[in-house]
Length: 338
Length: 292
Image 1 (tube, rainbow over the protein chains, first blue to last red):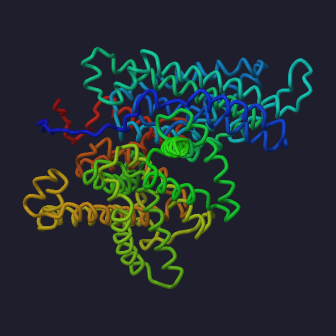
Image 2: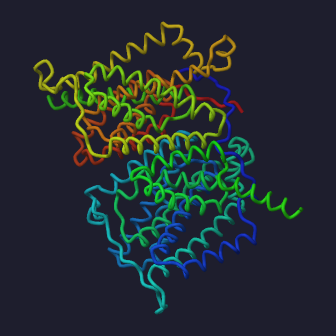
Image 3: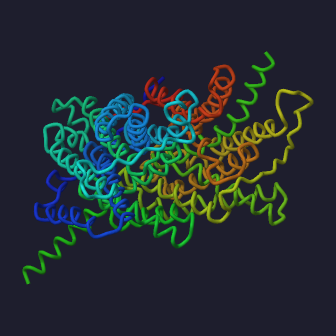
């Protein structure tokens, strides 16, 4: 077999994002935090539930963002990790009677291991191949969950019903509100950890790999280790999000975790701006609220609306919400000068 | 032993469809170095168009030819409108584009023709083929159509100026441009042909899996598996890969207990990952060597 030598002038998978551009300024963060803390006190339970889902999907998008924006790898299979996390929490709560809060770390660890193991072959894959392998994972996941062997644990096609936790210590709060604040605490904790991770030595290694793999390995970065690590971390966070999702929705079933979910999360990342962590919440808002609006126009149209909007984003604002934020910042700067 | 041959033949007939899908995927991959995740949905949409034509009273083969033409034009239109502007964009943007196309086509098909499962006619009937119990006439027809298609494509690429130009544009775009080939249009042509080949796969498999907007997902994953097995850089490999994957799927389903239809997709996943880990270039692909 003759190996034809090609000069591959490969463009980086993701456009480089400077490290400092990944987070919000302190002032904006505090405003965001205040809004997130106060809003549930003013709205109805259903909206609180939607806000909880906003945070949960925000976490899942954040996880994908660390993988893609941080280390430059793709995954179209996040729904699979989300599903594993959700099932782990649900099974631990319903079969083993473990407290819901304790199931989350377990879900995270199991997904980390799963992601790490799935990432091992991914070491050899880059760009399209990785997208392909994860795409196949996402499509195969619902069938795996339906398998007869695990039916005792997973409930098969029927899925599992999860009981919603009450507020502890007799706090005068509805279940929805308690769950919202619980999710908020988890989300903020993970957000802070993620920001610090990307600022750390490992984070710099991720970004070096993203920008130029060959140069990174020449500088002594263990490319395979850090690539799998990024995969594992991303899967772990997605798993926690999945666990929270299972508790919030009170139900897990194989068909909730199809390729559509993976596409939504991917879309959320692109809309929020690849590599810009605060954008995750914007992307998450997009994937939660836009389908509702689209279904209002016509049932079954949400996919088309998603697709068209995604095209608009990649053509008009390829950096997503980050670009909008930068433009807004510049405008405010100009106004101040005048 | 009869069961064994029966399964091999059934495998070859579904393999023929996977071969078509893989070929369509590889044609676009050759032209633009990206995997078309929407290939299956495009094929599904074409199949729906042919079904609609038949509902309006067009005879089968008339609808078949019309659909081929429409799919060809549709493929070109998608390339010109949506993917040509993305040619220089990073991989992520392209993947996002394909995913967007996937969502749009799937949803629009559901909107127009809704999600109920429809019967799709076969022009070959489903009697035993030549009196043998091994294979039905439809399965034989699938194999026959695929082989005709492959022979046609072979002659097109080997013996026509246009085919030569397309091969040149795919393998060395810069040099091709220097000798006066319009590489941009060659890519569009590749898209058109891929869409048409996909539509054949769709129309042939529809009587087996029934017509509905999600019918091609499994076929697409197997098409990907076939393309990876044969090597994404080799159209010939894609075809061989398609047949091998078809046979493999049937034999595993028959002889390994507990692996039925419900494990169809996980098997494809396992196959893709195994091939990518053991031999990333596939059976017939050429390894890509990076120059630092």
